[in-house]
Length: 104
Image (cartoon, rainbow, N blue to C red):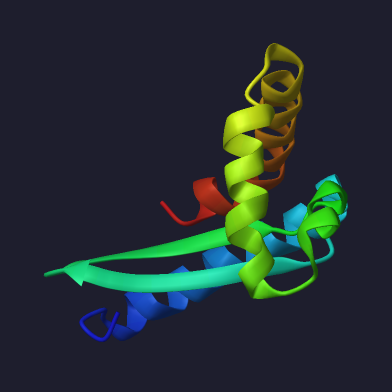
């Protein structure tokens, strides 16, 4: 992250801001956990994990994410759920269309 230019940092934060805004507006996602890591040279990840309603059965803290995500992987990988995810992705793509075309 510290190797990004000023322009790259600005574009990155604008991208995160726009995506988060679209998540809230189009998908109704009110809470998101952000995780950032640099585990290789010149490479980083920003993980954005939305807090979905069904996840509260595992708790309300960051520690509850691991069991919730394991539950999702082991119990929610079905066609119906994948269709819902794909619909959400399409909605976000639509919301991001103007941002992506203006940043080129």
